[in-house]
Image (cartoon, rainbow, N blue to C red; front, side, top):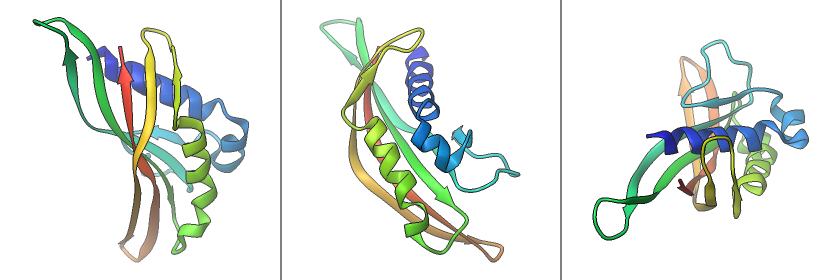
Length: 136
């Protein structure tokens, strides 16, 4: 279970530590869901699925995890959050690292993600991708 914590610690550290992304969203980077009172735009990453990778027998070698990472804007235009989503991709795709407690051997984007929604008359746009992480 600690592989999930390692993955999220790494993602948050990479995203929050970048000055360019900080200029776009400040400290508004969240795991799972943004707070109800969040100011937009935000970046949210959330676990989607994963599985243990084993050798022969019960020994777990690493975890293969899939996360959705997206920029969310309170807007009707995807172009308003495109720069944020592109920066997230630059920071995560084809990267690795060793945060406290584990190692992320690699991270690659597997597919793009785009969603438009309206909630009580307010328009939101989501733009990002699903990212595969190999973690121990």
